[in-house]
Length: 281
Image (cartoon, rainbow, N blue to C red; front, side):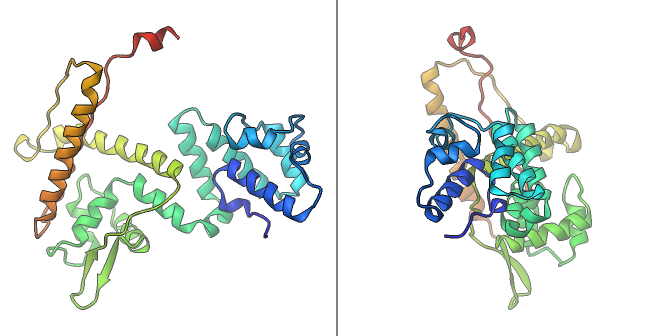
């Protein structure tokens, strides 16, 4: 069993569990109590508490582990950032910690695909490029895509976007037809990364909806909203109706042979009132 490479992890809890299993396999008398002492913890069930998210490792624990394991400065910094990522209380803090992780050369060298997946979910214009680049109207010039996308993005971003889409196998080159085609590949990446990146994505496309009020004329967009007073029991039914409409819309779009333009469709359902019982707690 090889010693776990810290740069292949974004979850320090998984890392510590794997480190323990490695040390246990390497040293016959190594125990959970021995492992706890490495973090200068007096609790013999330290690892179980960490694993089950009932305990957060403190900064002194990270440094103690780093010293006991002989981690390098870069490895220790990655450990500290993993803890910051896990303990973040806001989306902004979590996103900042993750960006710090993927910015390091050591992490990038072993997690190239994961970084690309994060970038796909983070940048709103990548799905737009994916739709336009496979259009029969696309002349093969990234500058054409740059001019078509609203709000405009640079030609450099278009080129990088096409390369990323190909790297993720979301598009592929059909040499017989001399054009790009879409694949059905689904992106698979750790759930904590997806959820964080999707928050970035939704925030941006919701903002684009607001900007469209001034960017486009009324006959080329449709913006509507309604405020509903409903019993709590009706939430599930409304959500099901929205999901049914969403599936119907996607099915209809799939029947259209040639994409001449790209539209963004957002659907949101969120509360404007809180639970009085929760407020008193």
